[in-house]
Structure formats: structure tokens, C-alpha cells
Length: 118
Image 1 (tube, one colour):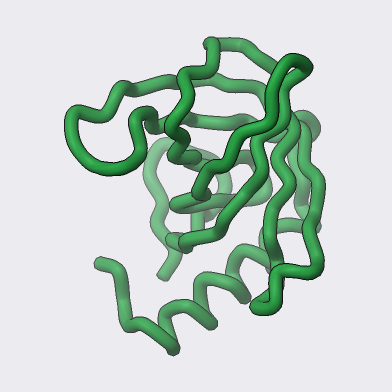
Image 2 (tube, one colour):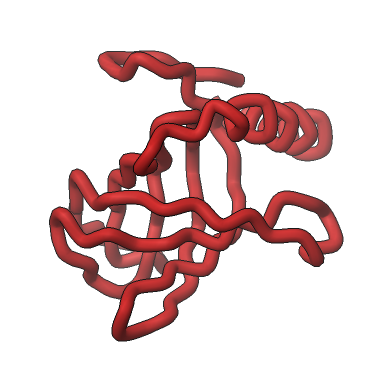
């Protein structure tokens, strides 16, 4: 189900694993919602505000196909509980209009399988 707020692009609530690549390290993350302009990423490792990262997003069920997207970290929030230590706002650079339908398809498929997350 799409959610909107102060952002210009519709965000789709989803749960997508992603590799998080910085010049010095590779990490694992989880995209919680996403749009053509950015994503909310959960990660165990602290990243830095304004870091440029590359996300390798798993886009199909069998996890053989990944899509690489560059982004800049625009927000970091330390989580108090749970597996993921940080909630990170990523702005895609440049925006990726081609991702809007992809994230919608993934969110719709997950909603059919698991029900609404809201």
C-alpha cells in the first residue's frame, strides 16, 4: 500500500533486502519503503550523513537479480530496540523513475502474500 507525506514521490511499503556498499565496506540492509526518489533503509552498521552509497537491491523472489542504485544518506536515526541498529533515509542520486513501478510491484506482491503492513 503506498504511503505519502511531505515527499514528492509516492512511497511503497515493502521489505526488500539490499547490499549496502561504501568505499570501505560492504554491509547488509533492509529497505522498508521506497519510491523513485529514495528509500528508508534499516542497517546494523552506522553510516554517515551525506555519505554516497550504492544499494544492490534484490528485485525478484529467487534473489538472482539485483539492481544497483546510488544514493546519498540524508537522515540517520539510532534505533533503541530490535535487530537493526539504524534507520537511514537515502535519497537516490539521480532520482530513478524506473524504480517506481518496480517497488509498487514488489509491495503489491508482498501484500498479497503476507497481508497489509498497516
